Structure formats: C-alpha cells, structure tokens
Image (cartoon, rainbow, N blue to C red; front, side):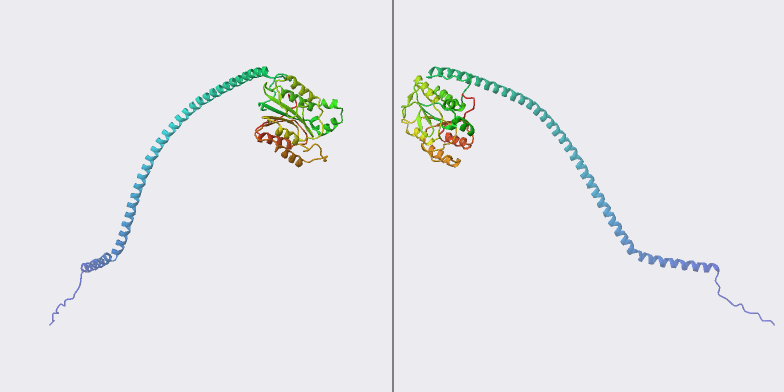
Length: 365
C-alpha cells in the first residue's frame, strides 16, 4: 500500500511584500538623509542669514543716507532759492543806487561846472579890479614922482623888484663886460672909439634901466647912484657918501646924463662896491645892483690877466660879507657869456638878504 506523503511548509514572500519592504527601506533612507540635512546645513543657513542681515542693515543704512542726502539737497535747494532771492534784491538795490549815483554825478558835474564858472568870473573880476587899482595907483604915483620915464609903448615894465625904501642905493656895473654879451664882441668893441662904445646896445640898456629906476623914486625919499669897475665912485662927482633928494628932478636928470656919457672899461671890483653899502651913513634900506657877471678883482689893480671860476666865486663870497644884515639887495642881472655861476650866486645873494633877482630881457625897458 501506498503510503501518503505529508505536505511540507516552505516560507515564501509575495511581490507585494517585497515592494513594501523596499519602499520602507527607501523611506528609511530618506529619513536618515533628511535628519543629516537638518543638521549639516544649519551653519550655512546661519551664515547666509547673517550675510542677509548685514545686507539688510547696509540697505537700511543706504536708505537712511539717501534720505539724509535728499533732505540736504532739499535744504540746499531751499537755501539756493533764498540766496537767489537775496541776490535779486541786492541787484535791484545796486541798480537803484547806480541810477541815483548817475543822477548825483550829473548834478555834481553841473554844480562843479557852475562853481568853476563862478570862480572864473570872480577871478576875472578880481583881475579887473587889480588892474583898475594899479592904473589908479600908477596915476596917483605919477603925480607924486619927481620925474617920468616913457618906454616903447604902455606895458608893465617890471614885476617882483622891490622899489620901496626911504634911502635907495643903486650900484651900476660899468666894467668892460657891459659892452656886449659875448667875449668876442666885447674884445672887438673894446678897440672901438669911445663914441662907438657908448652906443653899445647892452650899455644903453643899463643906462635906460637906471633912468627907469630913478623915475620910480617917491618925493621925500633919498637916493644915491654909484658906478663900479676896478674902482667905485658916485655918478655925480662930489657927492661921495651923501644922500641926494629925490625931489630934485634936475639933479636926477644930470645923474642919468653923466652915466650915459661914461664908457664901460676895466675889470669888476665888487668888494669896493659893497663897501659903499657898509660905509653910507645912514645906511641904505634898499639896494639895487645892476650887474652881468661875477667879480674879477678885489682891488683897484691886479697882476692877473686870467682868473678862474673858483677864484671869482671866492671874490664874490668875500665881497658879500661886507653887506650889513637887514639890507635887501635886489639884483638886475644882464646876459653874459661864459659865466654860468653868476645866476646861482646872485640869486643866493638876493635870497639871503630878502631881496629879489630879475634876469633882464633884451627888450627892457
């Protein structure tokens, strides 16, 4: 007989079970991965978060600065608008002031022109008054003068010369240099006859000057006329040391005639001429010196035929020391070639004595 076999049990898994197991393994794997991902990226997240926060802070700071900049810009724009308004106001004020200044300038210019015209009118009136007073005074003085002098035409013959004084002393240089202005012509005229020498233009001008001066003497005053070359002597002989009366017109005319007949000659001894100023008693209160050059000697005779400019200056200085203080010396300087020191020397003399110096022109008087 056949025996029945017993059935044996074998373990087996279905496909579904396999799939479930696999899926569970995958889930487990993902869970493990997720758990590690939660741990490891945590530091990165913090770093990123910190960076983000920093950027957010910078953005906020930038926005803040931007807001401040916009505020500053708005403030500056406001100030600019206010400054523009102020500038406009100032420009308007400047324009107004300029307009006023132009108006004032015109008014001032008109006033200045008006004042200048008034001053000119006043000056013209003053000059006219002075002229009329001078004519009146001249007319009155003409009636008081002892003698008259008439030149070529009516004109003011001399200004600046001090002609006042109770005692006037006239010193006239009659040395050879009075024959002409140049040395060559002086030598040439020196050899001519005396009649020709007396006609020398320069000497006739000197005599005419004395003639005019004598016509200015006031009645009641006194005068004396001396001429000098190497020696000094009065024009009128016998009147040495005497004061003459200006009232005596005939005597004045004779003095001028005697001078006109005198021939210029010899050198210039100014020392002797200034001795007269010191020796006159009483002393003169006004001296008029007619001269053309510096002295060439200090005595009646001299052994020198030629004398230098330095020696002539020394002679002049020594002579001027004889003049007493307080007596003005008025110099009438005639032209002379080759004596440049004469102008400054005689000007200094006039200035020192409070007198005046006049350079005589060719057509005076």
